[in-house]
Length: 322
Image (cartoon, rainbow, N blue to C red; front, side, top):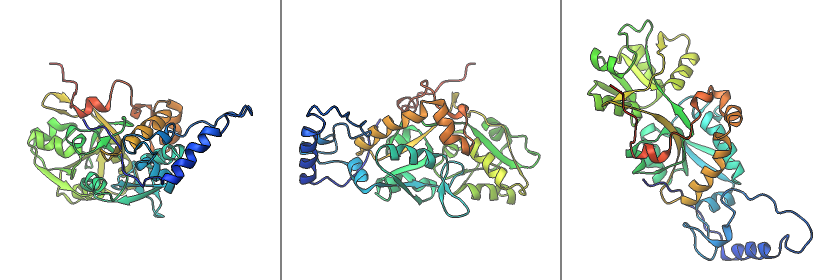
């Protein structure tokens, strides 16, 4: 697994020298002043790292700290990352990123909206610096980019016509009914359908998926349960309903779902600093509720130590007991 970080502007040699000079004489003269707590990623900034050199040139983290802003790619999926009616960037992962990046010395989070299947390609092409979408950690994605530690656990649900006329409650029901199944391009639900040989219709956005069900072009649309519940609540006049969430089973394996922030493989400095800072929120139930709770996330969506990025990147999933 490639579990690394980002790109950045280098610090100039003069600035690096000044930093070293200040470090050499600051608070070491017996004046009794305490050193301020280090910003994640800056503890050894003057010594160089994997993305810099011995002269103190920084990597992506140093560049973003110097600029004071970071650009994230998002796909407009509520309640993860989207623009509200006033055009403001918002959502659970955006709220998380504003807190985490600010603690790293990066005060502003800006967004670039793209289709879901363009998120990792856009990241690697340099269109933005990270992906803020609660993206599921999957082996094939880990081959293309680097994922942070798990931030959100999720399960799958279905959006179906009112009354659920085909009585669909899990992937096996869909497989047996032979109905038309809609999923977003590049989303994990698409891979479920492909593996199970289900009649698949791909869409570009969550709204497209709901429209497909309403129009009758699809019998069911699959997405994370929390996303579909948010859509249904925001569209009360649409003749649809959302099923109970479930853990998909494919080829006898339970599809454990965990979302994370995505970085370029080269940006190890940024990824490492991000994981350190994010742990202060993800690892604390009260902080998790404070930051992500306003978007409908609860303790049930908070990751535990039992699920790791390494495990999910390797496809090490639990099996269904016979």
